Length: 424
Ligand code: TYD
Image (cartoon, rainbow, N blue to C red):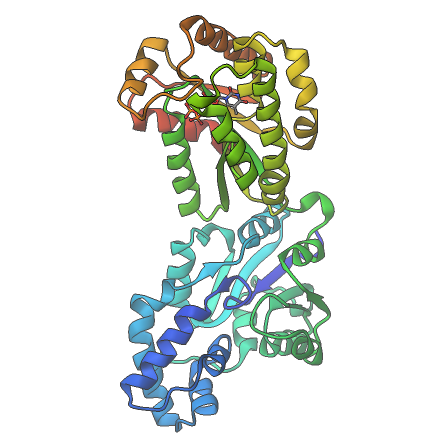
């Protein structure tokens, strides 16, 4: 653990909340019949206390500024609050910090009641030991008050590291003797942050991770693959899991094979088209492998490096089941042509959806017209099913079998139980 206390500013550090803030400021000025400055000026509302911004940036008197804040909040509390997005990589960073044993808190000039609602909305509530904001009545201009309130009881300020994107944050942290980190992806500039005395400047979230965490503590992405014979319902389950994870603040990349990126999607069309009937088994296997390495390099690895959870509808096991076994090309050949992909990444968890052929066929009959692989003969699918069986037996740690012949919700309960061990 590099720092045992880490305090984060919110706007411009955890979330890009400029959109909501700018819209609410504009709305307040319009309601009061005041001139509205352009967006460049309005964006400077992000971070500092609102009363000061209405006075300094829009020339309002103190009384007018307070009225403007009240009007601003009417809109903010309904809609503006959620006109934000959490910076990619922040949720995994927060979780990794908590896991390392650090005290992690938010210190913001936003009213605490708003902060709590936003964190809950974005699924980040459980990422913090403390949330320190202002009250609706007293929006203190002094960031030091919030930084001190965010500390664990009795801890000394000089043990803490604070992270912020504006000079106010850095200056307040420095004034308290904290280690001050300025971030370059928010609303302040490098010059502003260094002039305020930042001890460290983090250009992006990856640099912030490297500064705050030891190498072995840094966020690690997870790859969860969905496998099974055609018609097993795995795509529906994957969508449900992506939604469930997103609601809890996990960053998810949902993708599929063959496909998942433009080149691989084009290869997919060639492989699955009924026009490709007569394609040799070797050509088919090589096309799947070609699509896979492109997808791994352009989508899967970049997402894992950012600590995201990658959900992938089919992966290498499909080639082992369909091409090695179904097409009888043998495992060695398939392993060899997929070496580049398998050396780059192995799924952390594979969900194998079990369903018998009759049930799968009935489900497929209700769906889209069959593609080239779905139109194969029954003995092909017998070999595929037997291969999946063997894969599950040989890698029991990685592969979790799920009985897919039940209702969607029952199946989903099993999916959650299987993946929970893989989440931080
Ligand atoms: P898709 O529509 O994604 O299948 P489903 O929705 O039925 O899971 O089409 C992918 C087809 O490609 C599917 O029939 C399985 C096959 N496939 C292989 O044969 N080998 C592979 O390596 C992959 C990824 C898929």
